[in-house]
Length: 146
Image (cartoon, rainbow, N blue to C red; front, side, top):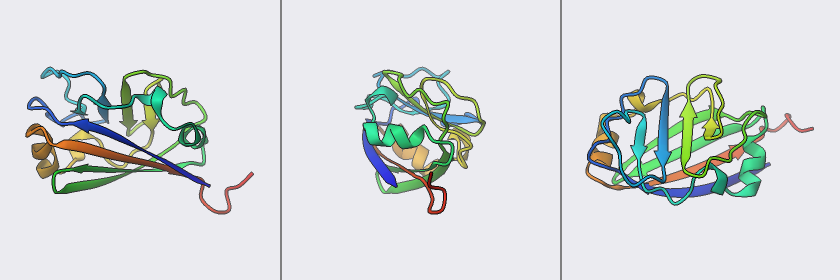
């Protein structure tokens, strides 16, 4: 079982990408220097807007989440896990976390990459204001069925 969705956002000159435990994409149009986890603004979706089939899979503890981030010529793949605790009802934000912490905007936990671990070439593309395409896919691995 697999589901996916695509979110489009754009970089911003103040993207720093230095947060040690998370990264975030937001519908907000602006960014301040304190937003060191935010890698893109002006997203066309928040957690609440994600495809219902994807949200159903993300809310499963068995879900393996693959996020492909593309900005300019740079692509980064992030692996995370889903959680039955996800509410996925935040209207503006999508957050990937290294920890197991869950809030209404969390779309991935136990992520293998956070803002500070993203390649600097990728962060530079975002600082130039490149479009960010986020391909979010969740899958229940074979053999983990009900």
